[in-house]
Image (cartoon, rainbow, N blue to C red; front, top):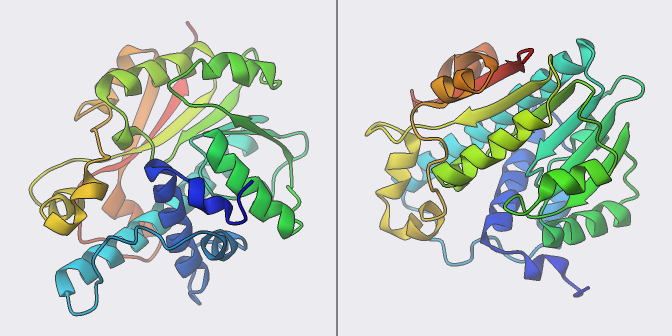
Length: 282
């Protein structure tokens, strides 16, 4: 392993570092929505994040965009925390974090007894993540298994091989993931989740819109941010609810801005939201 394991992280994993940096900022707030004790450790262990990006100093538009992203990540993190807590309270004892990134829910949330948590992400990301957690003596609060595999490969087989039981209800998250996938890859991923989900299983993911007044459209319009924006492929597009219902899920959604308000925060971007689904008996 290189002396600085972050040097080998690819672009999409750099976005995981970006989210960790934003969680570190949120964790320092007196009114924080969560506390991630290892977020700063990940940032400190990595090389400079996106070194080619322009400085926000003296650029109010970019500064506002950054603040909006920091708030959005904080809201998303807390929403997923609450969703998983509720799913486990309802009886789910298997949790699967698709593209788990550098979040540390296994270490920072209070889990019921007998919960098995599976994190799926790229091998190079786990090489970095496990090294940092090991140096800090981090101990999970549940049974945690890292499944190092590309989600474009046969990850269901790897997940089952790691001990996941598709006959038991499970709670899934695809936090911040789908916008980085093409429509075809997003559909294939969610179809695989459905095949692995017994009746009563739950799934949640955030969805975005590229409306003219959205944060993502504003970022895409910044020439200096073209490299970051180019990683977004759109996911399921504009019909995630209809897609999920057609594939045997009961679906509810919540507007991102409304969720932010419920947590005492404000988002300028009125678009996008969170989807929660429960697997029907089929």
